[in-house]
Image (cartoon, rainbow over all chains, first blue to last red; front, side):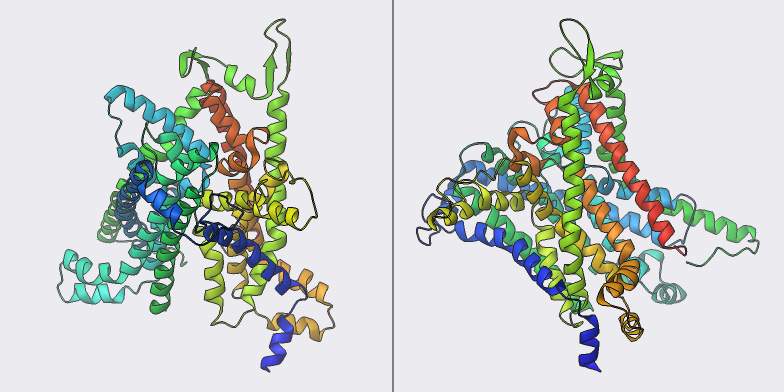
Length: 267
Length: 310
């Protein structure tokens, strides 16, 4: 039976194209990573293994500042987005369908639908007005913009978790005279925690990766790592950018791997 | 989802229900406030800006004007005032449309077999294959674009290898062409095609295929009459997920296309940067938004047609 099923599933050429696909997906990334360890300054000629470009990037003050700014913005935006998304997910899943729920869904998921460049331009105009009116040009604009487009990414896994949740434990707690807060604190929150962690991680990665909105919203001297790298591309290419890319890539893969294993353990 | 019951509710039940609905809105309010100020609210300002006159150096002058919308398609000669079509804009629109459609097509050609391949792996292996698709998906788009650039640039790995093998004696100009933008976009958006197709195929019942073979269907019949109709919603979803961001692409055409392969996103940016024509930029942004909205409406209608129960 088993080998019979296998044959039924086979369609000629599918596996070959799929493997090609995986090779194409990974070959450029692997090349980038490998050449970030190149001792020479060429991005094509291999001159030996070295951490030279990591040292160069590490000692570059602009890179240090951009890296810290990226992490600050991503952490703040992810924290804000996760809290707001958790509240909204609680609001939209516990009651059952009600008038206006589709409207809330649509509004929360709106950043997924509007092209980034359009949001970027809109925020450029709006924040420019506020900057003129208040004179404040700090990081808050970046954090607010990032938090906003991170909300749907945090919201979706939290909502999915809540929708699959058994309500009988909460009812049992209420039957045993737990206050609504105690029920939330001891039953609901621990049960939805995996969704919250997943949402926060996705929000963090999404914020860390953003180029377009950051490029338009940032004030002078507020480069994050991606906008710094984009700026460097205008000039001669240096393997330093490869090193920064690889470091960022490593961080993303690390977070995703953690996410993957968290999910697997749960299942 | 269960239908709301038709029985009449007691006043207490009614009150409790409206209290719950009020709580739902209250809980969603903080997120909605943030999104109003930092996401969709400012879109209304863009709409307003598209109907005013451009300022002398940048910004706008607050007087009603159709200039921005006029310049989306037309241009007025500065000497004799004759009106003609804005050829530069038309060619950018055409490039955006053709690149987005081709990107969707290429990602479909590669994405469908990949999703099929993953869905037909033994169940224990599937999460790993999916994970391999997810990594590029979550990897910074700029880094992936940059990786493609490293491979195809004049001093890049492809040209170096070809030169050393003596196949060519001049580096091939691959970067900053229409083809390089297409390659880059197909590369960065491929995971967006694979994931929804896989999702629609995951629970595919292969006994249907077996039944088809029993009834003497050829492999092509199996693909065309059994597999494709069932995974069609996934294909439609994947196509929309690739087409929409392709249309608004900014980073990939900027990095891989150079100045001669601008897309709509780059044209918009230009109006807010060197072009200093904010109303035109605003009108172009709204145009892009309307095209995307049309694509989404098309998708929702197609999805509803596919799934009469949803």
